[in-house]
Length: 245
Image (cartoon, rainbow, N blue to C red; front, side):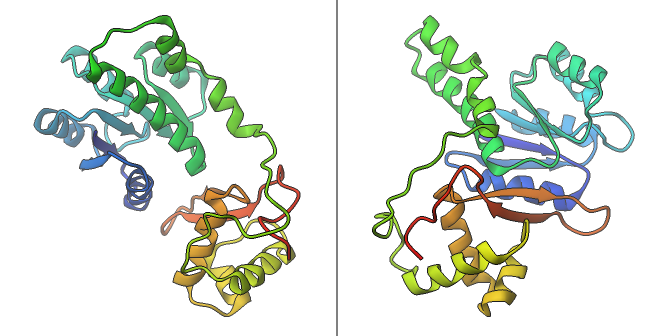
């Protein structure tokens, strides 16, 4: 699936690309920081998915939706924006955007938005016809509400998870978990790396395992200057660590 990222902040655009690269069968084919450049990307690449910001220099990102409708581009669009006003939401609905993500958002929420689009694309490619169950699976929004109210994740309390990577050690994981539980509030990779006196790359591997396992949740903190900061914190729905401390 070809992806176009329309975002004027290069750090945010890079972060969106990193999210895309964490998913299967997606390829960023073009980036644009203005509506005009995005129109050129549409013409050249005919992307399947557009990640679109609203606040762009010159023209609003919403004008791109009008352009796509006028020229019959059939790409799915996910609005990724800080815009929370009713009029913007109404226009997004009018133009049929597939989803609307308000900055900052988690990778999990982003993943759900993209996977919904991928599911429908897969069905369309198979060409076996559409039934009500398929339609309901695509248009049902309940899975998004579940991002905010996840069911508690159960972890075995007697041993390591079976999917623990061979290059992760139980001793290091135990140290990292203890330090995470002692931290007050969200933390960055750099903060935790200082606490445990390990390299950022090493700590990142353990954090990513804990995010994938559901023990940690991630969020994005945007700044006026500099690149966005990824933050992590304990999942409030999980009462026990993945294995005994």
